[in-house]
Image 1 (cartoon, rainbow, N blue to C red):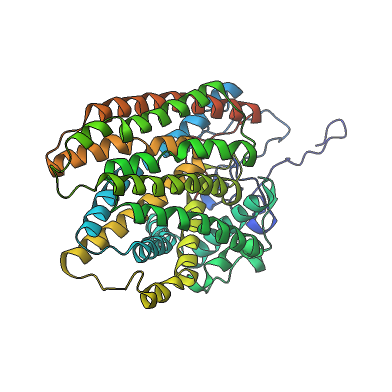
Image 2: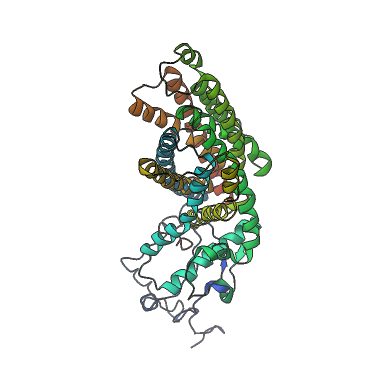
Length: 477
């Protein structure tokens, strides 16, 4: 019986009305959990909150997960969110380092073996990025194999389209698309519909893909031109000098603050690159023609200048990608990773559809006659393409989770790895300059990593992330 004009009807009783993505506000933040349908098992544990008498709380199911962060302070939650992003970033950092090193050695072998087709190799390798989205979709599908295909496909497109809306608006607070605009559940994924996956943001993503791909293509072409003109160690060192230019472009484009510790770390990394590239140049000149396969001094200098221009453009590409193709800071790591590989496929598809035009022109003019690779060269070229696609996907995810500056400095670690690889392949140990410069780069990376980690924790604390689950985010596939 009602007491004090209060209703005796429980506030929460029975199964709540299910919420669908079509009417849900999805903020995509770390720790945000999208409302889900209640199962029969969930309903069986529900009880009225008010029933006119004090009731004991129902026992929690033994397998149920609870948030381990609800009782923590905002500072602890912020550090947990930063650690989670860094954990994912560390995995893709290792993958990118290994794949880049293998790609460098394989590409150098292919070109030194006689198949010196810089633009054709660029077209094939960057075109292979189009496989990132299908491979990612296959992996996610295997993980979610118990989910019916229409539900899986609808959820995937809804996630990508809402993330694209976040990228375009630079705002995590977006309203999910109406269900009839989300997806045709009977449709199958295809390359023809790849850009259409972005829904209302398709026009924006096409424009972003166009100018980002052009910047990447010019930078990448300089890499393939210089790879046969200089040594792999110099190639890796100078190309990765893009860390300095990435930081320079980040200030006006990303509104990044000039921090003394970060600036010092970048300068130390660039100094280490210069030590590796030029520290023992005099000794190399004095030993003149001991290795007939080594590039001459003039050719090596020209190759270094070409790759230097590519370094500037690659730094610009990294910042443009972060600014115009990555979700805003605070987006859940899983969502960011999925969208990074989806955008990488767009770059590959744009390359295949548009950048084939110079190929027949180069063949007719005799600048780069096309010759089909065969035998061992074709096999090594295939492996180089696979390693490039692996590196591209990992590096795009790394930039999305951290920053272009940290990603660029992290890739400088390949200098040590490539130097060791050269030692193993040629029998020539790393020089004292390579060891000294590599040590400077390692120190710079450690300083920059700590600075970036503190910066991410400060940003997360400022945003007051207070609802982080120990399980998977529902934003993730």
